[in-house]
Length: 295
Image (cartoon, rainbow, N blue to C red):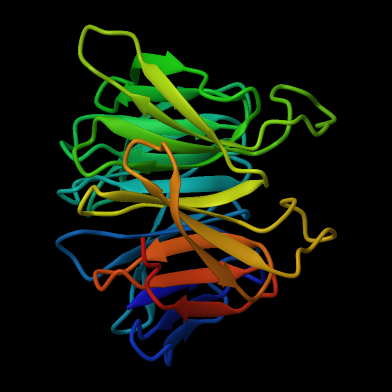
């Protein structure tokens, strides 16, 4: 099952093989759905919206199971721990909130970034949380305490997206192409991917690769052999691109191995299925499944 969040507040559940609509939550949020995450060990789906709400859904019944308390302002990112015990949300204010599941009890809130949180992901050990932000920073946190363990700036711009390697020691990020920490963002020439490696007791190290376009989505191969990065043009609806691309990069980000040309305009989100096919959303509002890119 593939979950899709819509700009009008709906959530769609699609059959991954056929694309058939299985269920629709028509008024899941009062504004755009910003993030979705399945909860391991349970049938539930979590959603975060620009309306500031974080909600848990039962796809079987179609009912909302729980609404989590959240601070004012839009919620932009979600991450669920591998054991399904925690869920973290990232807000446009730059804060992160940690909740216990299944009760939805708020455990901790902290001010993490000086601009909106654009991505969250738990590392595979479930003991650390990675965050990226429009302030240009990639940070690693101890979610139990809210203490920052490491921080680095892998790009010259803000960061739009992240993905974690299977081993958890590498994080792929994509530059958003806008100078961080400015009230009126202006384009700068940083259209790079970056791999940042973290090792205990050592400073983070970063390797960059030029992508050539704005990077809107990235994904990691569960086998750890490849990275996927997608784009198609400037990340703004008023500047749509006529096509999108997914590039397959080697694990060390030394060179692209294959390119998948896609219809639908800029690729705004990306999912690699177990059969290595790609489900993606385009700026034209359609969700499509593409044949596996061949390195």
